[in-house]
Length: 118
Image 1 (cartoon, rainbow, N blue to C red):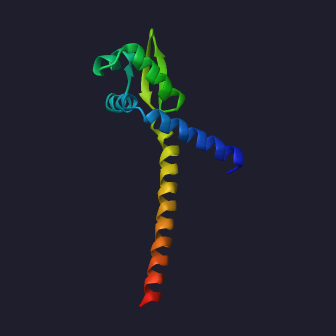
Image 2 (cartoon, helix red, strand yellow):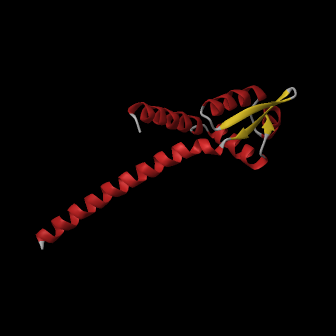
Image 3 (tube, helix red, strand yellow):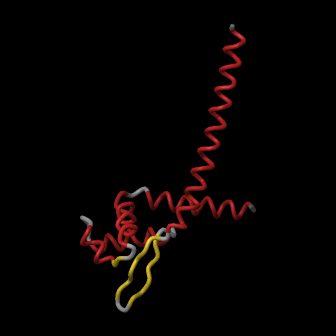
């Protein structure tokens, strides 16, 4: 991976995590995942926020690549794009593996020090 690709991947993860930081947006994703597709109006009927707020939240989710909107006549129907979560999942997996390595090193050092004291 080139340095630019690494920066692009990091920016994508940052965008996804920022979008997921808001509980309303996570709730929107849950509703969309359960229903498949929905309009902003339909989503506003199911959540305790206005349609205008839903549209703003959907714009953030769309910019992060987590949802996509497609026109169906006069309506815009939104759907979850689960593939966008792969970048964040890969980052979390790599982070977890890094911490596992660090903790294993700490354990090894602590056990070696313990053996030297005996």
